[in-house]
Amino acid sequence: MITKDIIIIGTGFAGMGMAMKLRESGREDFTILEKAHDVGGTWRDNTYPGCECDIPSHMYSFSYELNTEWSKSFSGQQEIWAYMRKVADDQGIRPYIDFGVEVTGATWDEDRQRWTVNTASGETYECRVLVAGVGGLHIPNIPEITGADTFAGPIFHSARWDHSVDLTGKKVVVIGTGASAIQFVPIVAEQVSQLTVFQRTPPWVLPKKDKPTAQWRKTVFEKVPGAHRAYRNALYWTLESRALGFNGHLNFLPIAERIVKGHLKKTVPDAELRAKLTPDYRLGCKRVLQSNTYYPTFLRDNVELNTDGTATIVSDGVIDGHGVKHEADVIIYGTGFHVIDAFDYLDIKGRDGLDLAAQFREHGVETYMGMMINGFPNLAFMLGPNTALGHNSVVFMIEQQTKFIIKLIDEMDARGVVAAEPTLDAQTAFNIEIQRLVEKGIWTQGGCTSWYLDSHGKNRTIWPKFTFQYWWETRKINAPDFAWSSPQTSGEGRAA
Image 1 (cartoon, helix red, strand yellow):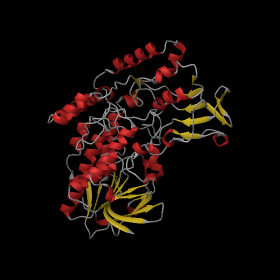
Image 2: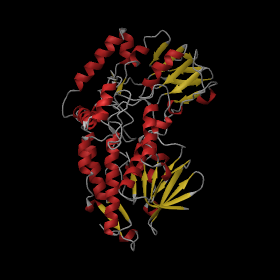
Image 3: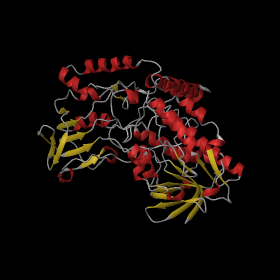
Image 4: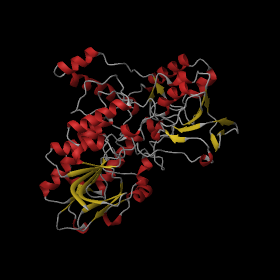
């Protein structure tokens, strides 16, 4: 068994951000467990054609690791991954990473007040504090379609893109029209002889204001003190203003919807096709997407948009809801990820053997500040429930969470305690307020169902306030919100 004070799971933005701040605070007794053989998380694993960010690069990066060399407004997967690898090297994080270690579960030992972390290899780790930086976009959501196992050709999810498959001249079926699909569909369309896209619900697709970064701008960022920071700050507040519409503070969503519909009308003159591509719910109810190439793709002679549903997969194609077969040499799922139900895949046992997945299924996915859970001492989830964003950069949220977790550890040390967990009252109060706000927001009132919602129809994904409010609420530890356990006490002796 390998023993550390702190264990971090994952080397995406969350895990790396946590590691950097731990080192900055003087804490070196930690290890990062990474299932792959390099850092990067989502940006390492998603290699589908056209993969890029939908938040401006100068904002979708660490505030303390600015990059003046972003090639364009919205950088692609390779550039973001290269940035993350460079950060890992520059910050000296790699020596703290155990690569090729897949975490399968963790168990809290109440007597010893330590976490035991189990891995796929059978090796175990032990720690006082466990930080899960696994993110929400790592378990592909593959729909259960009758006959999928009978298909004779390659069939894969966009997050597990099979680069050995040559699509040139092939008949390809794409199932799903989410954030990944709108990026790879236009590229695939240029390679194949026939492309059939199965759409269940049309997304709102805004024009993407993407352009190369001029060399003069890079030079200014590099040479003029404060210029880059000022530009990033301006980006932050511009993005932050979008929350006004989603939260219902200002009713400017109809303006944005008219922009999309105008863009669609200008791009797609065929009224019948345009009707299929037009959402029947409010903008923001589902994730808002951006692309300049998605709509024009459906004007190509070799592309068909099917809205009849997928009934069955057969050996040589897909049969739609009207019984029509669409021949296929390759099937690609663009169906997103398990987000809220990703917790079902976790084998985490807390105090008194409490099962995390079972508790979430029975009582709902509820946490304190989107990070900690009553009954699971010294466990913190980064980018946990209700901390995802629809308007700004989640890296900002990650940075606030890393600071909060370190402040909590500092508070534990100052108090001389070995364990801390949020009280049930504090956790309940936090969730009542969050649900009150999300029920007012466009995510609930917009007339759609989405992956933002859990099986009970509650939004357990989105942070419904401004991000600066999250900074304010996590800026310090509110001691009465926690139960503190001293070295001499067991579960019965926790002190508020």
